[in-house]
Image 1 (tube, rainbow, N blue to C red):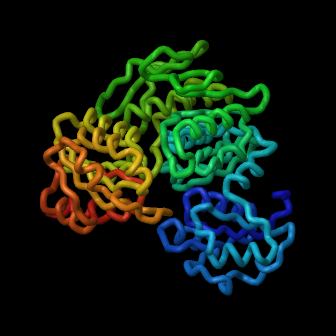
Image 2: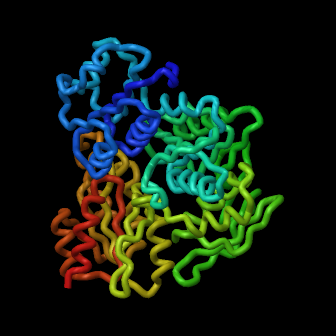
Image 3: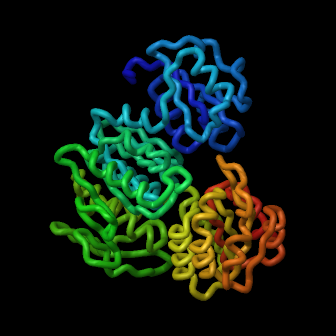
Length: 451
């Protein structure tokens, strides 16, 4: 497949965060871009406004005629999340098209470019967005494919005028093994996606294989303590090649000092809160230094960084109410979010609304979720968001609730949760989860402003 020949692109699952980034990329190149997704969202509406045709019924007769005959100018991309019995998927297969995964296309796009790939079971979206932002803000420039909507650029894809590309490397379905980066960052290798990998050891093997694919002369930047033999290590809490120290909170902002073997940058002000984001910024700073960005430019860029939508995002910030939303859906991500919120607002009672994501993840980490959610002051638990999975007998959000020590906990429906917040008006609210809990953001925001 030669990407230079491509004139038409059809994406099955176009509304996904990664797929929509590819849609925007090819549309930017002047290709005709169409696609299917099962539901209309704010993101698919944006794609339509940008000039792409999107359908929401899985019907082959809705596919435009210029996508009916396979040729070298037509590219079909699908996400593994789409069911195998999809009518549209089977239309393209039966018509003789070769179907490409998003990750394969990212591999093709990044081939021949200087690639920075950021991987990790958590932290990768914010870290890759930080790297891309530093390169853009400093004028070094890059293109980027991100796993979230950058608040600075209001997009998940950035276009550059040079050969540097920043890619979020996804371990789900071993997707990142299509990449051969010059600089790789690995932020974490916690057990996750066990529905795909079976056990933690197979996940670790995949990360080791990813690390082995770095181009000759390239560099791995990895969090200290990960079970890897190679690379430059970084940490905010222990000895490493690259460190953040003197981490402190002043006037609601996080500050830290960066140090590696050659460079020290004092008093970096981070534009977003969270101890975990100081750690992400440490890795991003090391990558940016390797790409020739000056310490002063890095410092200015990190202060101007506004984060990623749904990654520790302030929804309400008034004297009466603080409401933060976060994508956290793994126990360690929840721990980072809850501990950071409590450190920022130690005098306020924290009410957390959590929506578990996937039956398998709930089953595999019920004890871990219970332990971490006990750190909040009050919990409202929602039902599991199943995503691509069928129910598993005996697995539900009560599995977590029943393991918790916290007295102030309850299970509510979504509308009940909004009503509870409207009635109780908590001073400090955190919503966490990777499902459709983001549909509650606007209703909860309205509920808090209700007097």
